[in-house]
Image (cartoon, rainbow, N blue to C red; front, side, top):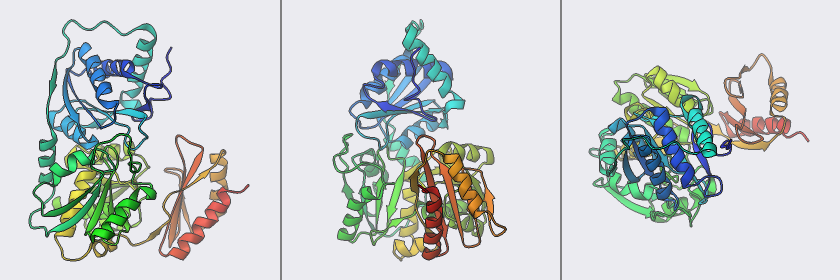
Length: 453
């Protein structure tokens, strides 16, 4: 039987085209998606990669062969696909490999209402069907195949986002946006249209070869062009989107990156205010101490989860949370079907900055209270053994230890989390403290234990 373990991940499908997967497999994935969801209709969108239109069309053909009608929305960001799934109440498929190199492509799947599809919510069943059909041949099309229609959802998506943020009365702002040749170049002009913004676009041309830099703003090297341009333009802020434009990173007027934890805290205050000063806010366990502090100060209830969008989304659905944020600049909103949308977070930042006279650095300072290490990776074969060595070294009555996700050690003035990568022989370390000296001391002590020869 065919083995798709290399491309079917925990929450999506991703691999190189055409050697790991191609339009034939995309057709089978479309048929299996229709079969597993039992959908009478689905919505399909794609990013700007050269292989995306063909893969999306093949997927749609496979779904139609199983009787599902297909609404093709064409070029879109991932959160625009989530909008279509939510607004049309249809299962959806987004063809993108986000920030991965040009030879990659993938599929993000959701059920109606943008509900995530992962291994335990249908993806394992989809994989099993595709592996079987790849070996034995696809089933014959049903008697009544589905129809194909096209729909432009960009304007409706932009209007919906604008209903979720009060942008009235904001002052004029100069904003530099680096789309990284990804889908932000497609969505930003429509979403920002009519706002009092002096928009300075960077790399808005859709190009899946990413000629200027990788469309992954989590890597500091990919923010350098934006930082330089913000300073040169004397702009009020800069925004950087990843390849499929579902994540947004923020740079202040000095060209300094704003930590996603500070953006999480800022947006949380605004969402709590929209909700009458109460509500649950989800954050993962490596976001800053600032996040739960700020949430409590503004009347909310913070809830801590493991790292990973599936845990955030599951907890949002379980608790009815109004908002969730991650250290990786994924921001989730109850009023956006619990899905993540960096664009809505960006609108919140614009509204907050434009609603007061001071610079962004002053605005976010109240939400950026501690010193963080960022994520430090170490190659480790014996992840469990090394983690236990660190645990034993730090165990004392002065700390609390928990194992919700890896190892978290918390003291009065600092904390750290050490957790294994799910896909590589790595241990990932995050440290935070009340001052830079303490942070560096704890970070180095942990790394000395992790990297013992």
